[in-house]
Image 1 (cartoon, rainbow, N blue to C red):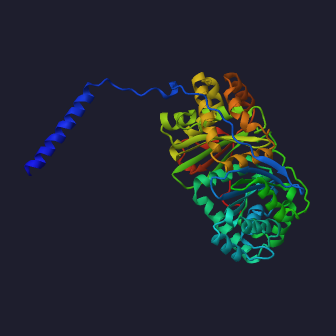
Image 2: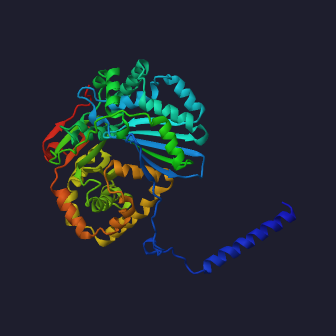
Image 3: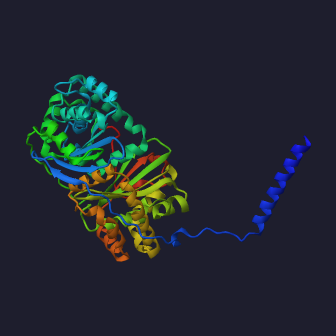
Length: 476
């Protein structure tokens, strides 16, 4: 080692010694408690999309955003799997799929795919239980060509037989594989148990998909796809006048009429029960569920807070703390609250090893008693309200999110000022509100319980919890 290099090492050692010595004599530094931080109040004033009704009844929500030369269009229709005919479950899903892939009266599906790919346009159609959605994204320079294709797909789908057969084969393969994922399979079957006796509880099967013919898709499309049943949220580098001209050009002549069919809520007199989904796995999936307030109910806000405290609030929520942190019985646990326009669903879930199934189930079944025995305190309430309100504003990061959510408010028949007043309404929730909804909803509504797993390995026999019904793995 040279003398110069030795000198450099000595100098470095001296510097490090001075730094460490300085730190050792410095006053200890403690980070402040994040719950005690003070900051100016957040003000939430999202821009409002402009709502326009075209002469044919089609509704547009328009919100300009000229930051990028990109246009996003989202549409929603009141139709979905709820309207699948008995014995042809899967029809709504296949209709959306083959609308997109099966071509139009003037273009084949393959030609459409090539054009969209060459123009970097994304276009998809998907059916849910009570709605069907269309998503479209394009550069402004390609918008006109993209809108021409979109309008033809919406108004004049060809439903080519070969594309239908391909879609049916893919759907059947998907159905065959669902049982391979115990968690996905359990939630899928949970809906069947929760909505038993209601169209929402009917699931597609290999047999029902095989029964679907092209004429069924044509009939389903003609029944629901009409201007008065369609809402569009249009955002991006496009003005109001450009949007109106574009929709008038491609949809203005579309005058097809259709019957606006309402979707009634499920019967709130839920028939509870315990359902076993036999699965030869070393883990169990446990899901409980019951009906809850709709998004338009005043009880929506306190129930949102209660759900956050019980399970959807993550690490500090009660279910997670008790089942996973305190007892180490689950690798995933929590709750969910799905608020729809005329009803809601509240549920809890846990994934645990087979040998602790009974213990975890006992805890989830006693949520009502537990939250009454140890009532929500002011600390939990403040934490939940702050967390919900602080995260809420991140749902509005761009014009696309804002316009789409405003459109969905009308679709769900919620008050148009729902988003504006949301944070204030959450802030107003008090301890007494939580006590009331616990009594009104958690006590009085029966619970549906689904357990997917291998019963012979459970720590308790399920019959000790009540009558048990076994669900079939395959509905054919």
